[in-house]
Image (cartoon, rainbow, N blue to C red; front, side, top):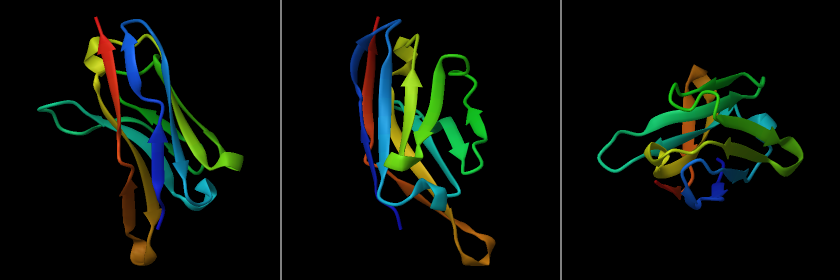
Length: 120
């Protein structure tokens, strides 16, 4: 199992920046992947950015070129640097971790979420 604790959300004006942090309760080397998802009111949860243990990254189309996912392995923490924020980035942002389980399957864990609000 792994516990995830997010921080760094808040209110920012359009064009501004925020950095989200997700601290894991175990070494992120032991995790297959970590990532960030978001969910706006009335919408489905969507991928923002993810990173595998091999440092392969993937971004949602709407954030490419503006958001960057990174990690600090010594701190077991994954970050999401968000630049050039837009009002449509307003959502609850969730940290996600995926662990490969026996039998070839995987298990996902979620943080409690952190609110990001971008004002116009």
